[in-house]
Image 1 (cartoon, rainbow, N blue to C red):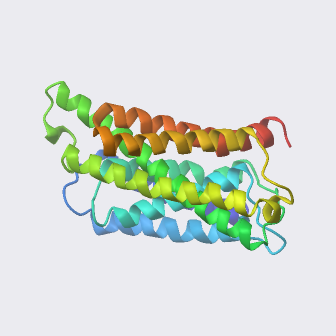
Image 2: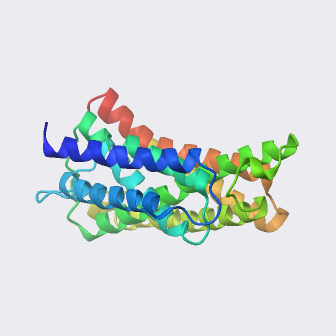
Image 3: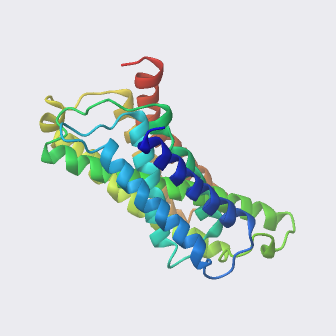
Length: 267
C-alpha cells in the first residue's frame, strides 16, 4: 500500500478518535491534553500530505478531492485555534469528523487536475481568500446547527446540562455572528480579487457562470443577514436559517460545480 494512502488512513483514524471523544464524553472547560495532541498530530500530518498532493512543482493541483481535503484541513486548524478561547466541544467533534472523511478523498478519487495560471500572484491571493472564507463559513454553519439543536432542547424543557460544556446560547450567537462577519469580509475580498485579477488568473474578463451566480447569491444572503442583525436585531432560528442557506449557496458555487464537472461529467 502506498505511503500516501497509509498516511491518509492514519490521519483519518486520528481525526475519528478525536471526533468520537469530543462528541461522546461530557466536556467542561479544557479538553484533555491527549485529545488535543491527537488532533494536532492529525493536522500536522494532513498538512504534509496536502503539500505533496496540492502544491506540486509544475502547478497547483486543486480538483474536487484536493479542494475538499484542503478546506477541511483549514477548517479543523482554524477551529482548533478559535476553540482555545471559546471551547465548543460539539462543533469540534463535527469538524474533526468531517476532516476524517475529507482527508481520504484524494485516496478514493486521485486528483490529477492542474490549475492553469496557478503560478500567478492574482491566483494565489484569490485562492487564499476563498479557502479562508469557505472554512470560516463552514464552521459558522456547523455552529448554527449546534445552536438550533441546543435551542430545541431548551424549548422542550431540557436542561442546558443536556449538552455539557457549551457556553450560554447568547455566547454561541455572538461567536456565530463574529464568524459570519469575518467570513463575509473574506468572501467579499475573494469575489473582488476574482474580478480584479480575472484576466491574469483566467486569461479573460470575468464571465457569468453557475459558480459566480451561487457565490454572489451566498454573498447577498450573508450580507442581508448581517444587515438584519444590525438594523432589526435578527437572531435565533431566523439567523440559523439564513446562515445555513448562505452556506448551502456557497457549497453549490464551489464544491457542487467541481463535483458535477469533474466527477459526473469528467471535464
